[in-house]
Image 1 (cartoon, helix red, strand yellow):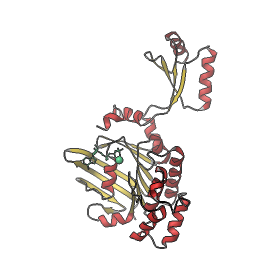
Image 2 (tube, rainbow, N blue to C red; image 1 turned 90 degrees about the horizontal axis):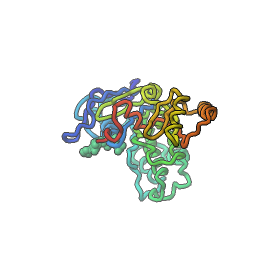
Image 3 (cartoon, rainbow, N blue to C red; image 1 turned 120 degrees about the vertical axis):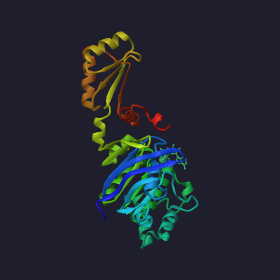
Image 4 (cartoon, rainbow, N blue to C red; image 1 turned 180 degrees about the vertical axis):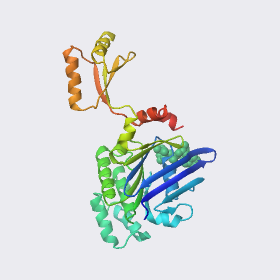
Length: 311
Ligand SMILES: Nc1ncnc2c1ncn2[C@@H]1O[C@H](COP(=O)(O)OP(=O)(O)OP(=O)(O)O)[C@@H](O)[C@H]1O
Ligand SMILES: [Mg+2]
């Protein structure tokens, strides 16, 4: 296999006159996690569908696992696994039967062992004999990914794998994804969660109005967006004035009587900040720590929020 798992150059896709992908260039090295970040309607699923040959591109060239998606479709398909945004699980079958179905479709030799192993790895052994219609959203998501793994693909596309999952299930999913990469698998992952991309991805790209408006490591992107800050809201304008004189690096918002104090959000710096307020006998009505979210990223990188991006 080539060193690069996925490359795209000048990739274009439109639905009638609506351009969704407007010249995308990509380069995802083998054994890494690439995350495509974007709000609803940005074109993430469209991109996954094109890269996985489910949808034909209008222009540009794409190679996946070294094969051209337009002329070597079959070879591409045999090298990849796809877990779509909406679970491909058959509700009427049990978890075990769903996995067996993938084995029967030619996914694996030694089927019984593979199915048993996957059920265990995804903590689905107990539920294995129950119909998937009785599974929770998180269990369904896990089963869906397990089904993708039956054929041991080297490149896996995950379209919003943790949307709608609770924090614990999200962490389980992250651990599974990390294990796959430790085994040398390449992951192309779409997400609406900045934190998820930050946690998992070697490289992140931000999709906005058909183009990748930023690409880099999580740290590189973070340097371009406003950082963590503490927001202090005061009861009166006089208190706001007094606090602003003490906390000179803060930016003030007179309308909401609030101060925005940059910092890392760690306990040490929070204590220092509170001590400082104490020292001057100041007290805030409200105190909150903000970490940047997708909206902050969009505002910083594109000058507009995610809602505009989705239009
Ligand atoms: N089959 C289709 N025909 C026409 N327009 C479509 C079709 N599929 C998607 N679109 C449009 O293309 C744009 C991108 O859709 P896409 O599903 O790729 O977004 P997404 O980033 O996956 O969003 P989400 O986060 O909601 O899953 C949207 O404006 C959508 O309405
Ligand atoms: Mg989508």
